[in-house]
Amino acid sequence: MTRTSWHPASLQLLSLSLLLCSSFLSPMLVDAAAGTADGSEKWGYVEVRPKAHMFWWHYRSPQRVDNGSTPWPTVLWLQGGPGGSGVAIGNFQEIGPLDTDLKPRNSTWLQVADLLFVDNPVATGYSFVEDESALVKTDWEAAADLTTLLKKLYNRNESLQKSPLFIVAESYGGKFAVTTALSILKAIKAGKLKLNFGGVALGDSWISPEDFVLSWGPLLLDVSRLDKKDSEKSNILSQKIRQEIAKGQYSDATNSWGDLEAFISSSSNGVDFYNFLLDYGRDAVTSMSTVKVSRKLSMINYKTYLTSKASSSGGISGFMNGVIRKKLKIIPKNVSWGGQSGLVFSYFSNDFMKPRINEVDELLSLGINVTIYNGQVDLICATKGTEAWVQKLKWKGLNNFNSLERKPLYCDGEEAGTTKGFLKSYQNLHFYWILGAGHFVPVDQPCVSLKMIADITHSPAVSSS
Image (cartoon, rainbow, N blue to C red; front, side, top):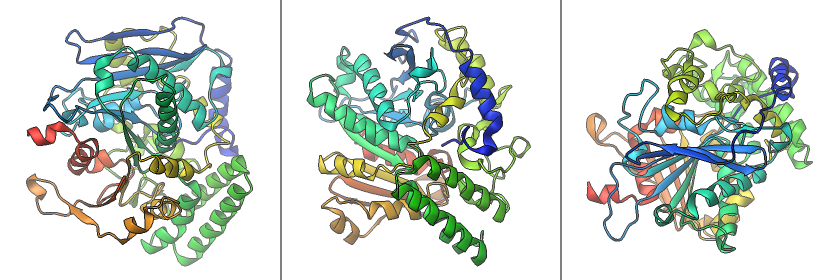
């Protein structure tokens, strides 16, 4: 999730956005695709609407097995922001086959599923628009574009059609996940999309902004990061946001959210919104030399939070605009990775604080598998807030879900026998509590994350290993 231009503190990004608006890209391609000689990777563009081009990258797992009964799954990874690049962050910094040193990732999710990364919404990452009018403003508009992309990829590909698709999302991507899932189901029912839909997984997802901001003051008081006085001030600001959301004043709520983050950052001496046990920039994946605590701390920095993982010159931007661009070959000459991403968040200013609890409820009522997973020490999408919005579900199975005991989760190896998390499941709702993880669960707890995604997707790799 990323903070941008409408707030007074964001004048620098506003200037950048205005510069980009004055030099939109000229038309250059409709659909284009390429891939490796062995077919293990494919990538390309789909023109999802006139002048709106979305980039995708598909990996076929070398561990694919066919046991005759359980089909090999595909994971569609949706990044947060809005404006975070799944092709870069999710792929090279979280779950893809290679890291930003181009070394194999031992914990890649490719071991248990095929992977599909998309730079969503348009203008994110390698995706681009030729004109500002082609940018989207809502979760539903983004879902429509993703559905169009999936129609292009799936409707003429029987191999993809046989592989159940699971949407796995992080942060703001959770809102995209639930709207896209409903859009996909509608298209399937109408006979416009040939796709076997497996379910959604919402990782530290911004489903109910109200419940998250209300959780910050009490949580930070409990862990001694705020004192009683400042926690109470945080609660007052949170209640203001709650009232603005109730009145449908979503842009005002977004600005008030920025004020609340600024207050918490100052009062806590720069707590890390992605791991409340740390100061911002003091963990293994950030660089203090490039980070300054500001009112736009968590969302503005979402796209670059893991950047110090990229050891190539220029960080993740240099990596994507250098060696990866050369590999892909089809990126238009006047398109740079991230060149328009600064615009994306600003166009979502009125949708950013809207909840998507009703969409989760609708998926559950339709019998779709919904998995929720949360990192224990995340603040921005704190487990405390996630648990609060889950209790607002109207789903008829909620009381039975609440009455169940959690099951402990473990991993093999050096930490065998150490509790790594908990799981509670009832019918088609599944909740994973991942211990020791912040906002980026696959980075902080790769072993249990891999076991979790194998379970979610019913991967044949588990039974064959």
